[in-house]
Image (tube, rainbow, N blue to C red; front, side, top):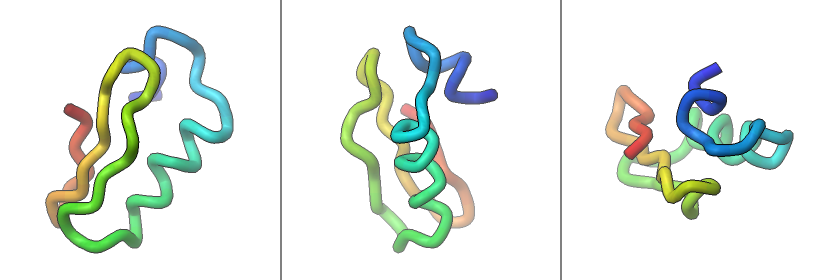
Length: 50
């Protein structure tokens, strides 16, 4: 549901997969920008959307 609030479009599978891949990612990993410019970053123990 968080992606629905952040993205200007309805999230698709690739958007969800990009975010869930960060669950096991090393600290300071990040995604490439989502539509609208938001980036997800790992700051253990959190995943931040900035």
